[in-house]
Length: 625
Image (cartoon, rainbow, N blue to C red):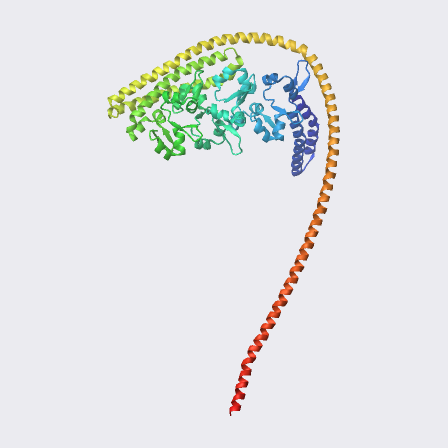
């Protein structure tokens, strides 16, 4: 790939030189500036598409006989080799069964990638060319730490490999150095938590409530480290029980990372990050234990204050206090805590580690509960010291046989040493503060003899539990040493086997390639036959469609003619009915006119009768006279 890029550069150099000469020949400064801008734009216009095409299409490598094949060929014929040597050659087949790299998919169908392959980590560079995560880690390390800390992985022999590669090749190293790389295998392939959130979300709910993460505004799931890098205030407000802290490089690490790699530092700085170790010495938060074995959590850690929400997800007292303090007051008045100067609420464990005197001064009725929490913290710190030594021993055993792993882990080892020194100084300071708080409580009679006896008993019980948990750790160290010897023997056998396999593959590769060429020829012939059959079938279907269309047109025409005749008959019947109604209306009108005339005649007669009577009266009067 890089040879092709160099070829493109060599092709463009004469063109760039000619443009540079044109710039130098210009005397007018303004004209010289304009020509220089045009030259730069032309170079970018020619160079960027060519380099972009090369970066997308030229993924590949040479086989044993020094024949170059693209990534699609390697994925088809040697997928295990790709996973071992080039795990970021991400890609898949399109509808035409052509293998396309992840950059092509992100360019053509980003929605499909988000739904099916969120583990194809990468982003667009300044030329809008999609680059995978290893390119970014090699060229823009600081940018990745500040924008995409969820691209989990590390360097080996100078190259960056994703978490999936590390889990397959060095699972013990991942377990001891990166417990924050959340993920699990599916059908023999390891996928990060982001893949599970998209493809198997119920798996996270049922098995790993400790994989802290949430969906952003566009519906994409990201782990807690992403939000603490890009939206820290949102994370603090909405998920205060995503426990964690920033390392020297300002990368946010979750509580499992700190408790497993620096248990002493975590016990001193954050005793309110509740959780415990399983039989494999992996630390899980309280939400995980309450989900997997609530009876065990209730019996062994009654100090883990919290409750389940409507979706049966357990949250700590601090989470509930931020979400609904009224509900906490009504349902859990036993959850003791107070607000600091920034109006952030903290439980009693937090105050016991940082400022026990404040609680005794402001809430003296909490003295016994505070001292009980302090006893638990002191035992926890002692156990953390033992755990730190055990973890360091296991880490040395893992990297002892691999020089590259030792170099990769050197940065982590240096950080652990610095944090351990810091933890020791703070531990001594905490012990003094807690002892002073206990002495003040005795002097002020805030603790009676019975409570002091209970505190002593609680300390003895806590020490016994810590000792019981330390015994399996010693046994685990012995098993780890035995496993290391077995691993060294397997490594030697594996090296001999690989050497023999490489020689055998070199002799078989040529014959296999010839066989594949014959198979491709047969496949092409079969494809041509299928194409001819498909063409004949398509012609037959076209004829059937044409006949069906003609029949449908004739049927529609006949139906339309019958419908038109029926509508004409209906119109004629309607006209006859209208004429009949008009004739009836005319006869009725004539009858009403005759009745009006008769009525008028009768009225005239009635009007004439008084006049005739009056005349007769006058005549009779004259006769009488």
